Image 1 (cartoon, one colour):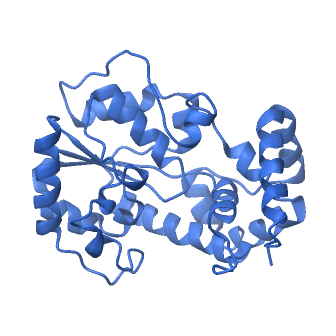
Image 2 (tube, rainbow, N blue to C red; image 1 turned 90 degrees about the vertical axis):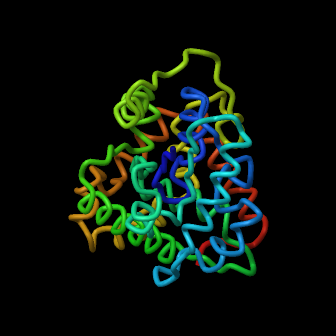
Length: 270
């Protein structure tokens, strides 16, 4: 059996997948970012222009490799959360059939942009705020298409997960009747480990931007208000920006520290 967490990159996918795997004793691939796309046998396929919508994968071969990994793990459910899967939900459903279950997730666009800017912009990758907003809009459009095409699939957000993780427990139990979460101590790797577990890091990511940069993000987002409304997000006003800083000062300072370190590399946003 497979559970696909369909989520954009830089949107809380790692902490959500780690949480689900531990709560339900699922197999989470041990490769980069805990994503099946990085299994050595399938990486040449799945990492070849993964965000190119025209690319078609040999899902029968991929499934055969993943089936072997699942058998060797001793688990009964493979939890897969490679972000580019969001472009190929129909193909995955066709290839995996009754063995596949899905959960859709997404996160705040400002947080997404802050996380991407910090992690990906280098001298060889001249990312701009505009290109990152375009990236969120592209992913959000595709996620809306997925939701509208398959409305039976449970839908969550990174923010709702952080505030109430048990909503994910209920979603998984609904998809896989008979599966119940195990109540035990959880451990995380990556960003969640650094903050002691499940913590909404949006404030840290948003703090990476000065408010004029936030306005640049808002200008692009405002061109597609229906998309924001669909996912329950709003344009970030100056008042809300200041409120986030006041409510989470330790995360805000962490974001400012990230910005200072990044700025010292002379890679300021264009």
